[in-house]
Length: 241
Image 1 (cartoon, one colour):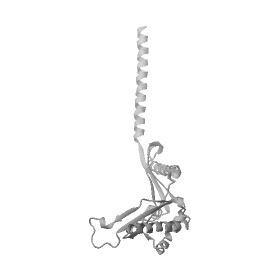
Image 2 (cartoon, rainbow, N blue to C red; image 1 turned 180 degrees about the vertical axis):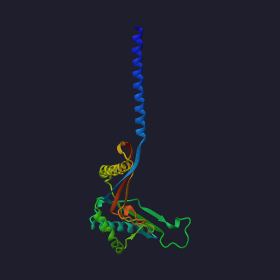
Image 3 (cartoon, helix red, strand yellow; image 1 turned 120 degrees about the horizontal axis):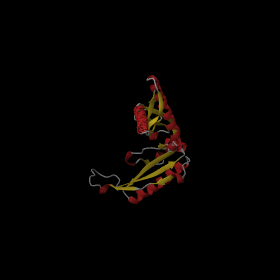
């Protein structure tokens, strides 16, 4: 009786060892399969147009009498608002920025005679979704010079900046396109190596870039209405025999 029990126990142990050996072997195989993957990059680009314009317009008045310079800057503000209204840019699309007053006689490092003691600069900020109105106004800005409005504080006026604010609306489609592009590359790699691709092992969405539509050297993206949005995603695909 004990011999039969011992034999049965031995059979059970043998089956258990065989089963555990099979599981260990399969685990090693699965681990090796996880080690076989390919890393690829997927590119997606989309042409877009700016949907918002921001335009800081700085203008200056000078005089030896502070009140006279202040009156000049106030008059220039009215001329500028009328100019913008004539191009469809209404008062609710503009905001006056902080006024700056410089007393040249108070400058510690000045040299030579002072022609006008006070310099007052004011900035009117235009912010609107009416891109066409800003384009037209910026092209006609010379009309203000004819009205004796001095533009550009200290000789600087950057012009309008054109922004694209709807990136979140196009992100899903662009990510899908970048993923499809990456999978196509991975499939070709697997085919060349005699295998097929499995699931995604790891994925990195990548950063979205907004670039100038015209790729001219030193061209600022913010100065162009036409833009190109680009994303490069990095994905790892498992390789299957």
